Length: 449
Image 1: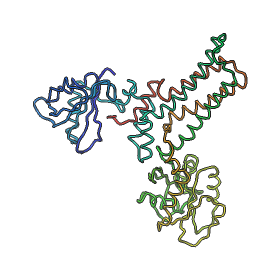
Image 2 (image 1 turned 30 degrees about the vertical axis):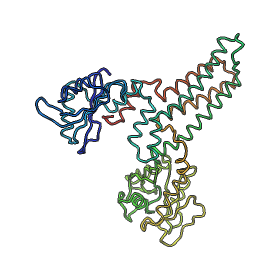
Image 3 (image 1 turned 135 degrees about the vertical axis):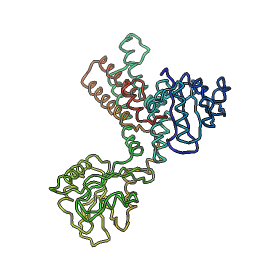
Image 4 (image 1 turned 90 degrees about the vertical axis):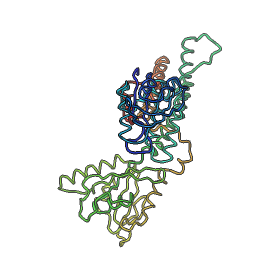
């Protein structure tokens, strides 16, 4: 991190302004080489300066340059931001001049990575920044802000502090058994403390499922046999002709994906191939994928026909939905009723053709995922797959330690296991990490962030 990096921080394309960001020890010096107003070299931090970007004697653009001196910056390094007119050619020219004069082009997420490595933010806050950039609903924005603001980090630190207290008591009792004025830590007390810790971790994981749903969306598969109107339903839900609709069975041979927003819920919709026995090789591959989607989806819209009795294919699909989140969408309710719906659950009658009751599907989904309740709760959740995976390992480890205690493991072995759990919790917020993890995490950021 000894070099100085530069990148365009605004979206590529024509706009009112574009921002080119520079960070590093030589940021101010390098920008001064191409800026007409040389007086800002010794200027105070967090000041804005008017002038021109120059290529030798040629004016490139009229700009405002903001100076922010370390350590009170995002990266804790000197940062200079050039606010230029939003021409693609002009913006690229300014970046080119910076690179010629000593900057290196920043890698994806490198500004945020430097903020983490310099102690400005931790890993959960970094992930919150990315979630904030990618937020698609107001509630996902609020969840991301809680991460950026450190509320999620504080939650994990509190767990570590509780664990550290247990470890400290064990060590004192092992090392100084002769001291009468210290609290005697018994196996029962350790087990009781770990039981409380286990409940808190389990509660965080349970509630964080809401955060995953609200941040990443609900993976929703539209499942059914051919010609029940799955593609028509998809098109009606998203309000455009995304999927091909015909009367020919097997028209949809592969999945078609689309995104639908229902208030603060994002549905990642997948229209799947109709499930049936077929000799067509291509269609059979699509059918196999449809069956896999049943196991992978968070929610299934199971589509059947109002004007047909349940077929063997319908019953096969229904048998695979046991224990799953699903809504039975009975389509073509404008026709004569022939279906026996007495054994169907979460039934909504619609006509995709005539746009009847389509809105009821969204209402039912909000009800199933308790959206109204979630919106009024504290939105402090873990949302990244990385942090949730680590916390699940922590929960399993705590359970294993408690099991070991019940089987009379030596207290010094319990202490070692608890220290390992403490270190695992530290991985969530980045107290310990490896370079490969950082490279993978920050590579998902845009270049200018």
